[in-house]
Image (cartoon, rainbow, N blue to C red; front, side, top):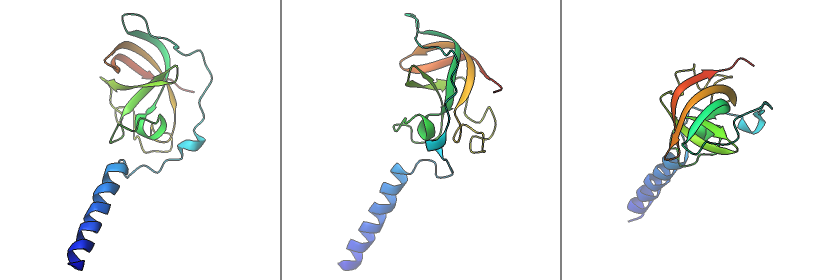
Length: 129
């Protein structure tokens, strides 16, 4: 009986840890991520169109998107974060590198539309700082 209880506890612990652990390969220090100050897009048009400079990073690691269960590309407009569809997190280099999306907040020139709280990207270009 004790063995069954111990086994159940261990299995429960590992399952719970996997749910809340994220991707596991992030060696992030997002508490020190600096956010650049530039004229960014601050609002979304009535039709959802977005065009201009935005903050881009890993939604889970740096933008606090806890519903994301793995690292994924996201943009931020007026402190609201949106997952990106049409451009992936690894399309712009190693996301876990020192300057990758999991460790840094970057500036991107974007064009696209927001639908159902997802940014549908037509253009996604990282800017050199």
